Length: 488
Image 1 (cartoon, rainbow, N blue to C red):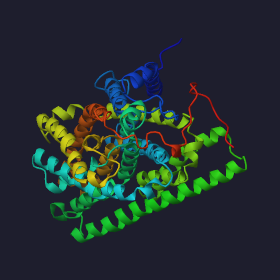
Image 2 (cartoon, rainbow, N blue to C red; image 1 turned 45 degrees about the vertical axis):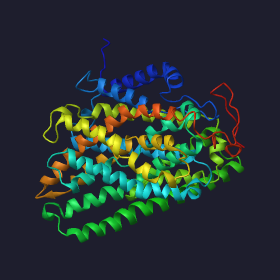
Image 3 (tube, helix red, strand yellow; image 1 turned 90 degrees about the vertical axis):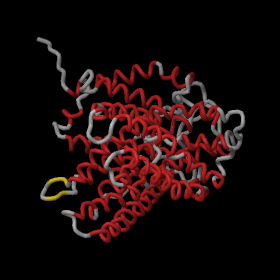
Image 4 (cartoon, rainbow, N blue to C red; image 1 turned 90 degrees about the horizontal axis):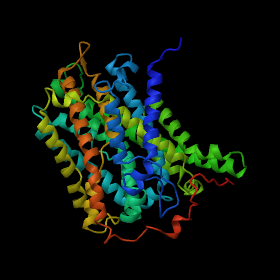
């Protein structure tokens, strides 16, 4: 006799497929008419099917609606076999996957040799700029969270220092960007958000190492400050950052040469050619994960090296496979975040009152990035006036990268133990980061769409430099989104 087979697999497939189907039915209306994202570019010919801030919020709210406290259709803890630690590991791996794909694609969007040509403004944004965002956010956390040391607030601030490449897509690509954001400004934002994701490690681990070996008198973890600083230079900078850059550059360059070789001999078919960048992202994430280096930074560097001659971007400019896969990953990951988020703990916790959390989210939105961009914008040629400065400063979304660093922190602090138990200060920091980081990220995701208003105000005064240029090799795209060209 037929019966309902309500297994977790069946429910997840039905829920995810149903949501994406319903979203797709009105996606063009939302994206093109209301600038909530972009279905394809208007001035440029490359199609853009990707998530935006508002699409991320819709997915996030869908995840909340399907989570155990609501309809109970998505049950993350069941998938982790009832283990909170296993659930954290699953979420960390999911974030790594999405960031790896996003960052390779971000590197592919940049013109030939962009990181080399624009190293001066990028160095300013990634060096003093990231440091300023880290310190300002940490100071706000220190001021608003009761009984939290400044060293602990540095760890929390580091989690939300990088800007998110997933959410950045909403404002630097598509119809809105074509009308309001100069091309050079779009590119510097993409490059910054791509590079600073992987560069969050030094800011986070200088705090974590000091907490482990100096905090609480270094109880259970001998070595002191000298050991902490040694690990920071050796493991974080040497093995994680430098090795990640070298490995990403080598893999991207070799992949580029191999694909050139295969194409010249007509060994590669169109389908394999189009999916090559996605496969490259998976390879970099997997192999960097095996050796324990910075797979996030390596993915961006690999994408940039792979497109160093701009060949692959121009060959795939009319195809939508990569952004389509990108969209599916983004909708899925934000739905997952909505389902796993401990919403009840925001209002009921012993870490920080809810009114302080809300106020902290607003303060971070206003003071984390705007003062930094204001101080440095006169040395960044892509920012040409005060309105573009305000736009760039206000737009610094916090999203998947913050989730990634949150769970890196959670995983590391589990190892700070005394007699087999997580040390008291480490346990408290785990609670603080889980609550404060997620509130900051949620407030950014909900409030940052108003960036569009600021961006819109630049329409009358924006520069036309770079919006359509000969070197971009622009060609008109047919109305049919699914038309193909042949490699070779």
